[in-house]
Length: 462
Ligand code: NAP
Image 1 (cartoon, rainbow, N blue to C red):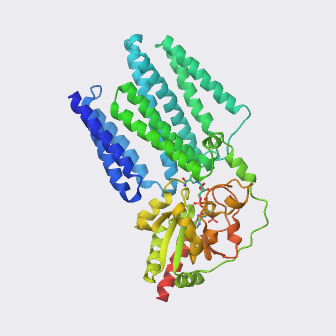
Image 2: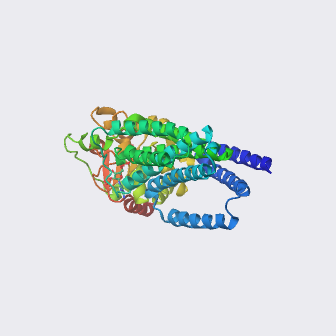
Image 3: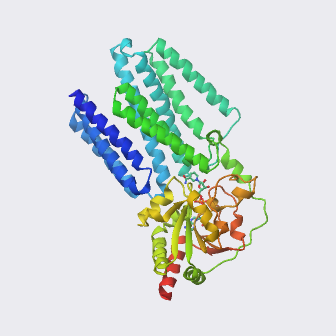
């Protein structure tokens, strides 16, 4: 039986690895998800067959309650609230590892100190630390993103020293646990420090950097699961935890690189504070407005169009009407593509997911490096709810908080139309001088409503 279980775990691990590899390409991502889900099903069934503490009925009641709560929230959550949801998921992942580590500790410490060997204690301590930090850190991240606590960085003098002191206290207490494994007070101290560290490490980080932090916490939740795998001697948990841990850290690095920030700079916090003062002093930007009819006429006259989607497209849920715009343009033989910035929106792949939801084929979505040279030869660039990712200050203004961030060269196109509601700023909280450039025209209004009108004008023209 145990060989059959290990073979099932091996198959599940292979499916996870293949699944995650397929997730790297948008067109294979769904297949990757299905393979990983099958792997998870195999892993769950195999694990259930080994459990002798709970009855099947008890387990299924728990699955039903958890599943119902998950389904309830997942079906109701707005696309723009996905980062908050991911933060909660990570937090509960950390909490699960934390709870498993503690329950294993209590079970074994009741038997005897000898049943807590060095490997076991190390795994339990690591699970408590990473799981605890992930849980409270993710909860703070959730509260900041959801606006329930201020998104501003909360800083005070000696903050980093306090974190360091807590970490040292954790290490010393861990050593004492090795000397006196059944001492519950020591475990209590470890629990308290890890929960406190999660709060203290996330409060100095501004709401603007939360997506990066969430990706990092996602990686932590994987590492916590991996440590729990060692506690339970469960190979598939070790493999799955390592995969989540490694992919989370890779994603964190990709996001930092795309925002031209170092991870240390993000973690030490204070980005939101710089933003409040940075890049605000320039002369007022004078813009030229364009109406729906003229916009439709410019589309009609263009032979190539590049759409730059951004966070505002997600807010307006304009992706479906953009597909209709694409259909109108393609009827006129206009070359119509999308330029995708790696941090457009509020989470990695945000734009790709929304456009895929509107059945826009993947080969129309071109990544920044591949498309940036095409802007000067493009007749019309249509920016829909994007702001920071096309802000030339990233190239020209060393004082700007986004200076050095690679941007889409939308400003180099022959004509640029920007669809947004007002002169509102983007995520980085700074002005965008592109809106005042001679080749730039502003189409003010909610993206979905204005583009709907543009499409109907185009239908009337044909
Ligand atoms: P952005 O700079 O945040 O700008 C979004 C714009 O959308 C706003 O200026 C807003 O202007 C407009 N908007 C909002 N609602 C709208 C609506 N209903 N219709 C039309 N426009 C609307 O967005 P972005 O260019 O996509 O840049 C993403 C930012 O997020 C970057 O600074 C990036 O570093 C940051 N970030 C992204 C990630 C990620 O993983 N994607 C992670 C961390 C940070 P109005 O208010 O005037 O309408």
